[in-house]
Image (cartoon, rainbow, N blue to C red; front, side):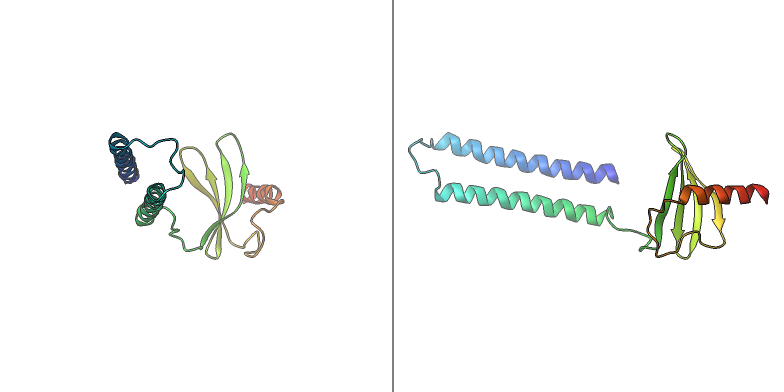
Length: 149
């Protein structure tokens, strides 16, 4: 679906640019503007306005396509957020997620996401800042507790 909508947007933009170029070529073929003519005339204002409306219509169309394909909507309705993350390697991370009232520690690699631990009691208050400087220490405590169990 992503490739299809991108192809449609690209096709529409290419068609619009060819139409504008064709309109400009036909005008240049029929009339030659002299250097002594006024720089601002009714035709130049109409051409500028038409170009502006074309650009605005293209932006509105792309926004409509993106909205229809749900590119900017969140399916979790604010119930899912990342509380903290810790880089464990070049492509590995440990992330603490808030899912509703529950907190889950997940390991993220380039090829998979795996649940490491589901916390019984929250480590970080729900109203706390998402950038918690003590996350590394708390992660080590949880891993040590998990190793002792």
